[in-house]
Structures are given as C-alpha cells and as structure tokens.
Length: 237
Image (cartoon, rainbow, N blue to C red; front, side, top):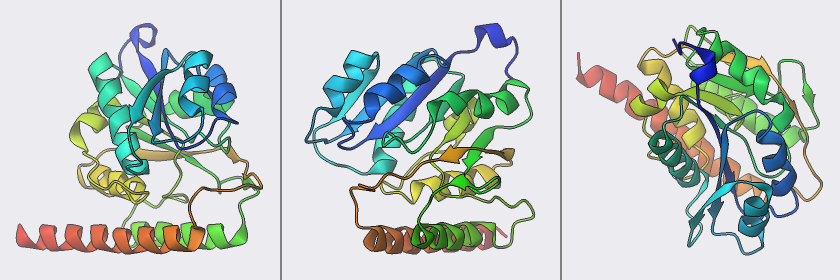
C-alpha cells in the first residue's frame, strides 16, 4: 500500500490545551520515531507553544479554544500539505507513551490496514478511572452496534492514519466526538481498521474539561452521527 518504507514520510500531530508540563518530553520522544511533529495549541493560556517549539515541534496556534476535533483537523491539514504518508495522533497530556509509536506504524507499513487504533483495553495496561471506562465502553458499544468488525476503544486518541484515508475522511465535529466520526466514515468507505495494544497513564490532575459534561456531549454527538449515517444510507436506497 505504501511502497518503499524508506521513502515514507511519517508525521505526528498532537492537539494541546495547557499542557506545558508534558508536551516537551512527548515531542522529544515522538521525534525519535517520526519525521516531523506538529503541535496544535488550541488556545492555551500557559507556555505550551513555547515548550513544544523548544523541543523541536512546529506549532500551529489557535487564537481561541476551538475543540479537540478542530485541533486535530488543523494537524491533518498541515500534515497533508507537507506531504505526509502516515499521520500519528496522540494526546499532549502525557497519557500516551510516544515510545509506542512504532507499534501503530507497523501494520500500516506492512500494508495491512488504513487506520490503526491504539487500544487501552486489549491488554488493560491503563489506570483509567472506572467512570471514564464506563463512558468509553458505552460510546464504543454505540459505534460497534450493527457492525461486523468490532473495536475495543472507539475513543482512543492514539492512532495512525494513512494519507489515503485522511484525504477521504473529513472531520466536521469540533469536539471529542470527532474520534467516532472518523471511525464511522472510515468504516463506511471500506477502509481497514485494526487495533494494537497500548499503555495509557492517567494523571491526578486529569482533564481540563468536566468529565460528566464532556461524556454527555460526546454521547449525544455519537448518537447523532450514527442516526445521520443510517438515515443517509436509507435515503440512497
């Protein structure tokens, strides 16, 4: 699928909001495995952009907070413009281990898949709080409903995408529901989706967003994505 691996350009895209504590180490480790790192600073109020730049990343700044989906979209656009063959996404809060990037790249480099999800739940190498696990399980169940090919982690932000997929699948949701939007659209277009086990470390300070509000908004958005997909399919018959 990707031809000679020596000529493949791999880019990492890291959406960030107030992650000055972690982003420097993440960028430094990611650069050991990819050709370039984009950090999308989504309206941070701290020194995220400066720290990322000092660590070797190219920073794309949003003047105001636009959401994880919008930040991911900005990273994809920059990577495609650069000529990337593979784009890896990972979180900027230190949950993902950038040293595991090769695990996600291997199936793409072998031509076995178009989208690789780093799953937190295959080998259960995560300290995810129970309430978050419950929310992710429900969202994943909604994604899997009616599908012959199931996944274990529809909300993981640690992924690797082929250029062909990114050129065919557009992100329209600005919030965290974009993660399921990409999967639904990729599945509908016949792209091959696989998972690999990853580790994931949750820190005490947690997310910058309220988990209940965040979870409810994502669930409602995912329901909308699934319903619109079903209605659109029926309208074509």
